[in-house]
Image (tube, rainbow, N blue to C red; front, side, top):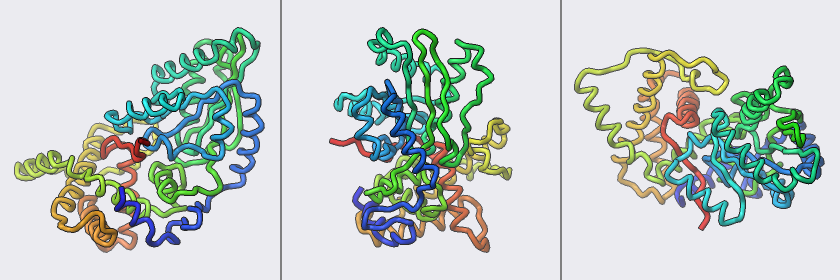
Length: 370
């Protein structure tokens, strides 16, 4: 991914990152306090569930916690597996296995998926269960990897076993990183007593690698305003182009052309806000069709611009020219007026929304280590 790496070296000041350490200027006070609390409680934890984003299995690890976590019984839960490329996911499971580390891809919104995780946790605790009357399981991870969603699902499973817990407060879930700001726990088993603690998502104060920081931004672990939506979108386009991903959308492009020739055009106007995680009500069928149509239009625009590109994708200057052309193509595909004062911002936001919701397809941005 040489081309993507090169383009990041330009305009670093605009990204809130710098070459002297890749600093992300976002470490709220509650994160510092939470980090201290997590470190204190890790001493007492019998097992840790470390939640990571399946799309960035390495980049979503909190490196400051790794030395402590490596000394504990641990299960790495690769959440949001529905958004990750299934053709590559098994390679990550094999990789963690080669590191003698238990790893399980999950979907925190699927009860059956979380049930498998709990079964693995109980298996890992089997020896301690026979010796200890009370066991503590901690859930940790960087912001917005789905810890609270996982906790809520575990709570539902525990409540079916222990109805008395039904009235206990559930973890807050939101589309923005850093929603959970305290540490709370509840019982999931009686004999022995097993408690699960949820913790706030915490980032390290500095991220040593620029690309790691941008991957966290692409997947939403850092607030968009910190890095800038436009810069995040530029990075994502650089990754897609250097991987030649738009070429996989040729069939979408061809089918779209056939539809246009047959006079098929969706005139409905709905909002992409229906894709945001905070929305609980499923959008109406016509809205779903609209969002799918927008996603296809974006795929077609990126395929056309890349297929017509005659430059060298490994040359950072030519790659930047292509990305500029793609911004224009996306603006037309998304039907954003040229007169809009914040057209590029609107393009970036909608493009990132489609990607994060999985509407452009499943992806894994990290490369499996050799």
